[in-house]
Image (cartoon, rainbow, N blue to C red; front, top):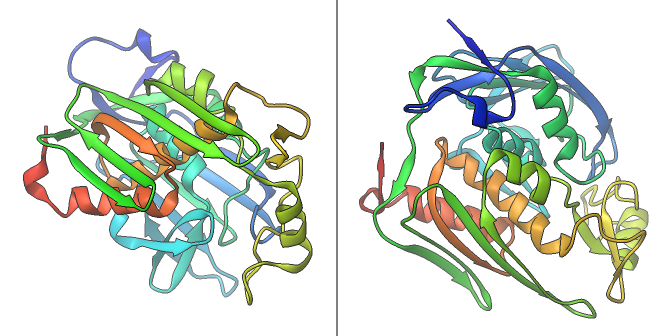
Length: 300
């Protein structure tokens, strides 16, 4: 039994949070960032306890299910990916962040390629699709990972730390050559995420991105074949081509990616996060360090 809960989520009934899925399926198509290939994704409601699962439709007609699980994570250039039975699904972070922030716990995402579409480089298209599909509460409670003590990972000047706290609060800092320091701090709520974080686009240096599209920087890969000013915020000597969509857009996008990567833990995480120059590798290192130490958290 499902109960439709209209957005914004502040209209939801009081009491313990219940798991939720979509009220209706939705389908979106577009070009992928790294391969440049066209991909179609159909995101459908799923039963309570199902979690987020990707289903790859292969050329030979087979399908392989790949759960969004931190233990299946595979390192990929400038993106997050999971692999199961040799089947890869990559660039999942923007959809994962949108589902997590809008409190959608259970969906089946069917895809006809190995990489999700990038759209304009932000999470706004995914958020709009989720809102249009609607949110339905389910009968099982949503269990949350609550921090019992601080967990931190670092690599040189990069540092990522989570400590106990109510809800999810993130403070991010980033310093870029020719651009200076950019900071953002706030609670990750459904409405706040859509307004403050989701519009921030993937970013990179214009000359490097264009050369990557033409020649590839990673030998033997299809690195950044789909990048363009329509799919990313491209930086040129301290400026964003066409201007920034939101203030301090680069650090907000790093927080967007972080929200998506945290979602691979399989349950919402509550805590206060400090992120200094973080990226996908450090994000996944924090999730692995946290989930591998059961004394640092409890499931409530």
